Length: 104
Image 1 (tube, rainbow, N blue to C red):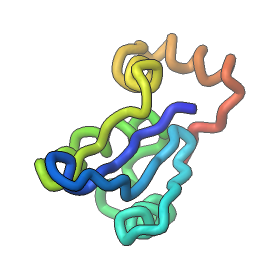
Image 2 (image 1 turned 180 degrees about the vertical axis):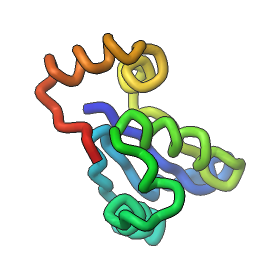
Image 3 (image 1 turned 30 degrees about the vertical axis):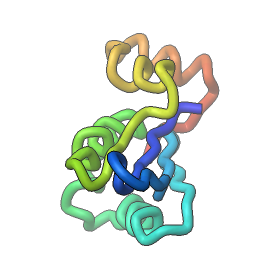
Image 4 (image 1 turned 90 degrees about the vertical axis):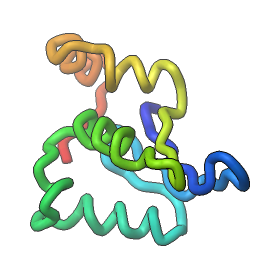
């Protein structure tokens, strides 16, 4: 599974607050997880509604949820490679081969 994990207080009392998969599924029962679920569903969200694919969403989360108080990190090196390193053609092939629906 390709996903991002969002942690609160990464330097002291590190606590996982949400996980988001490349398919746009959010797990967790925290306010952060609830907010992300709502934002992904909201077609009027000024930022997240612009993303049409899970890879774009995970890239956004990796950059915007890393500010000192929270940290977003890929769950594995393979997840980081799929999201950050594959070119568009290789990514589309990976999606086909994996049989995933990454459209948001």
